[in-house]
Structures are given as C-alpha cells and as structure tokens.
Image (cartoon, rainbow, N blue to C red; front, side, top):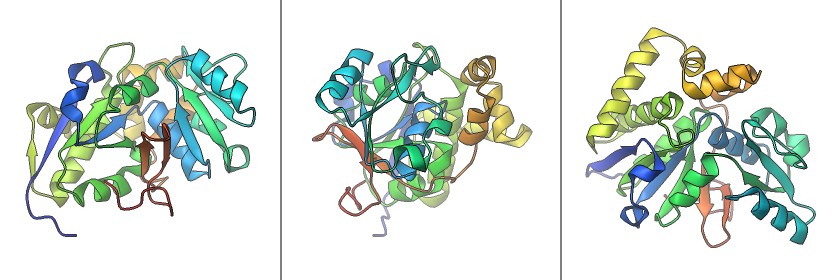
Length: 256
C-alpha cells in the first residue's frame, strides 16, 4: 500500500479535551509514557497473551475472581496495588513472569485514557519503545490520526506531549500530513527538548518524571527512553475488551 493523500494528525493534550464521538472511525494512539503504555508494550513484547484494561481496582479483582489464572497489574499513587501481582513498572513484566498470561491492568491515568477512546475505529498504544513500528503502521493508512495524551490527574504532562510531538515529527517525515495547531505545538516542544538534552534527561524534568524519581523509579524512566526497544504494535480489541499485539498472527495484523 502506498498512500498518496495527506493524512490529518491531531494531538489531544488530555482525554477530556476530545469528544469520544468525534473519534469514531478514526485511528487513536493512546499515550501514557510514564508508565502505562510503556509497561503494556513491554508485557506484550515479552509474550503476554493480552492485557485487559480496567477502570477500577474492583473491576480487576472481579476478573481475577472469575479467572484465577489471570495476573493483576497496575498502580495507585505510583505504587503497586495491595494484593496485585505486578506494579506499573515495566521492570516487573519480564518474559519469565508474563509469557502466555493475560493481565488485568488498572492505572490512575493510562487505562482511563484508553477507555475514554473506545469508540474509535482503531486504538493503538504508543510509546518511545515502539516508535518506529507504530509510525510505519500509521503511515500505511489514510485514516485520520488522533494522539491522545493521558496526562496526570487531569493535568497536562510533558512526557506525553513530548512523545506526541516526536510521533508527529516522524509521521510528517514519512507522509504528507495536515497538522492541527496542537500537533504543531507538540512537535515544536519535541524539537526544542531533543536538541537540548538526551531523552531520559528530558523525561526526568517532566511532572511524571519527577514523580517517578521521588518514588525511586528512575530505572523506569531509562526504560521508557529506549527508542524502538520493543518494536511491536499493540491495539485494543473492543470485542474482547483487551489489548493484544497487532503484528502477530491472528491478532489483527494489517489493521490500522
């Protein structure tokens, strides 16, 4: 496929700044760099069968009650939820721990952002760890692209905007694109920061980065800054209500 028409790219700095109905039929990229999207991509890259996003802790616990073999992962206040198997740190999601398993997953911001967008035609997870593969997938389609940043507790966070700007920059280098004003703002932020310091350094200076440093999770920032470390695509399967690899046999390969 060699699309020739320009694709539109919009950035939403918070989920609540977009109407879910306006996303119908379009492609959405949900972004929570520190850490939900990075962690989910790590889990799927390490062989997890699927990740089931849950809005509440109680919903995850109910899934566990009906399917005792399911792992529980997530955070509240940045820390592992009592009684859960895994936190929201990508370090927890080793191949030995998650391969072949389904994970019921709930976080303060990332899963809420994803579920806000579930009326979209396609929902992908975006992070620096899958930047190249995701860009290729988005550019192989003429669907409008909406990059939705999770933010933190209803506030815009620099790490998500930084990735959004990086993704916008990558897309416009590969395809002719129509950019919204917010896309241009995000791209300018990315260009400024990427010219000043390393990605890990830039992430540490954001609100999410400072929160993780204060919680002694600096290693998670380093992992989140590894561009293309997990070169996979992941999409939300609305029928099964779970996130799966989109580049594996039987998981929706070729869907954008």
